[in-house]
Length: 338
Ligand SMILES: [Zn+2]
Image (cartoon, rainbow, N blue to C red; front, side, top):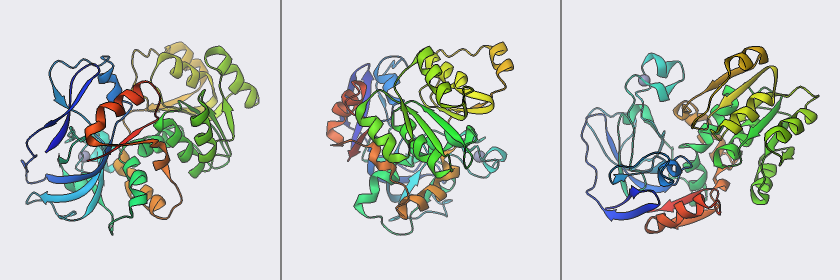
């Protein structure tokens, strides 16, 4: 089969690789219908996360079940499925508490930018769609595998409530999905921070009511000016840098909450500043599995269309161009068709 291998910074290749096999009775092998490049894949592509040897890459997928292990009972060959980027049993105490990405038995599907992938813990990880979805729904269903679920978690972690004010820091696919989530959860005012015309447009389409282009001290001042001088009820931090975390913490009112889903890179939080701010803070890898049934319903009914974050569609063989376009911010997110 064809599979994407990262050899080092900036070096992405599609190569022939052996097809994955069932290795545990709880595995499933699926044939990918669509996969994509994640903003977090760029950390390796840019050499920020070291790549010491060639390795398969990619963790977002939708596909058709090809084969299942003997213990798998909730999905069967031929079904169209979506799964989380972290595999979970969905039965341990952490899963039952709604934190499947901290499952006691979690596993990491990797190498999803390929024609076939092995998904561990298939029963707890995959959700089947009742019928084969129409082609036009594939991008939005694929978005549920990571970015839309992550945006949803950011909004939940930031305690977005009906009638509240939310700020979204970050205009990548996750931030834009966070705008959808804030809107669906009832935020009345949604302030999106973005400097890019095409992303501002999509944010407004997804439900943002205000756009802030300033950053740093100016960005904080601008958000406060829009929120009675005190900051927003909920802030979704969707970047993972020191600047974006500061933006988030200082844009939140006392008693408000920050949900942070950008993978932190060299982020330091000042304990005294946090103490005196009265701001609640929750983050981590989003438990997208918890939200899949609900979000699938919202996509199938046409209520949300997160697939619009894919502004570049390529064949799997063109994956290197997908990374390049996202690295250069020419594309928000690249969808790959094997
Ligand atoms: Zn678990």
